[in-house]
Image 1: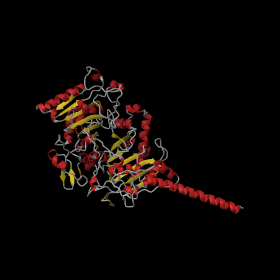
Image 2: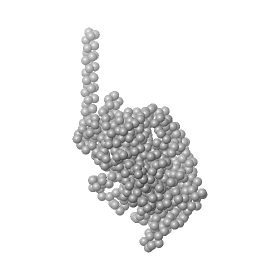
Image 3: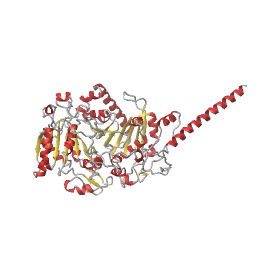
Image 4: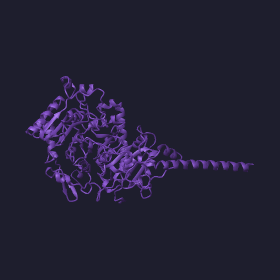
Length: 614
């Protein structure tokens, strides 16, 4: 009897196991069936598409709930052993600034207002699903600070700017290198002398433009190859050097290769992705911008971005030429800026410097109906992601109007001091200081992990993909790096704190490609970024391929996220060729920890023509 019962028990157990196995197989079939839907990717061991479709376009498609369920049950789905390499013609691809896409999708941007230079991201079925190859002969970039003055020609094989701007000393081809003498369209004999001249015009102590640390954040529009920003670094001034991907299409690529803070962007129809009152100085040197168009909307955008009493340094023919056409432009510009309550504080030679008012007093004295009007109280001046520019003046808050300044300490004290605008985002000074303390410790731990493989000056361009309050960047203050702090759209209100600390950054949605050239950052830091995009239903695989696009060979990624995500990402490390060096640890729990976390640090290999080079 006992033997019979044991047989029945064994039979039932086998039945349950078979049912369970059939269920799991059914779920796996469902997964793979759905993965053949439009936009999905399936590869063989060589990275070729199994469905025979175009290996360049498409997106990963998966059911995250199903994947999580299977992982909980101990089943892990197959990931590709390799990812296809894009054709060499895509070696400088910027997916959201691809003008070819505009024509393919038959978009009709308004060319007169620069819409064709603004973001136009591909739909999911047009996303690139391959690894961007480096150009032929690519070398590990020259390290900072030598890179300020020279880069490898093979890395950016474009010499047309050297030919076109030869008389202005932008850049010079010298054998295997391209060298940068420090000149510009307006400052042929060097940005260093030009910067001293601006300080003299403003009568700053010691002819130093930083003015005792009160000038820290600068916006340089139409920056060329960013030599102005390069020489500002000597004064502990950080510039957001901005230029479009226009006829001088590689100027920002050269700037980033040099290790100079810079980004692609244009004063077109959308607000620049920065909060209000972020810069002490805006600069335009022969930037070829029509400041009078559309009721002065571009100057009003600068007005939104400048702090109380902020300066606008303008070097252009209309500031000094006496012919009728330039006089007409100057008079119209002067009239507009006077109605905006700006005043000329200095004018010498070919340069004029305006100053923005310190309070609302001048605005309140304007005659009724004066144009441009004041912005409505419902307008949020800090909203900047896909927000159209407005032809109106942004007034100061009651507090700022009363105090007549930004309330910020001079640099470098402002980096660690709690800024006044913390109260606008509901963060206390105690929380701010705790955040700073935590990130100081976290960065120390990161560097300990990388110590064995990191060489002197091997990291220069850094991106924090989820910047929060800027604690990660602040913790790097003693290292010779600069950080592009990226705030998610959901957390974009916190970007003002980044700028109030004397740092720079931008707003971005990581469900889309970032507007920069391939191979422009040495270190990408992603804290909880993958968790966030999964909440929005976006593909972590697409983000990994995008991170690979903007990461330099020999560069590092630091991914800090929950266990399941780190486990999943690890399966792509070899396919991404990020296995030059690898480390994974479980970090100490702190006040910022979102449950159990893991830290994965990986290093990208240098490879060419689809083959890894050791």
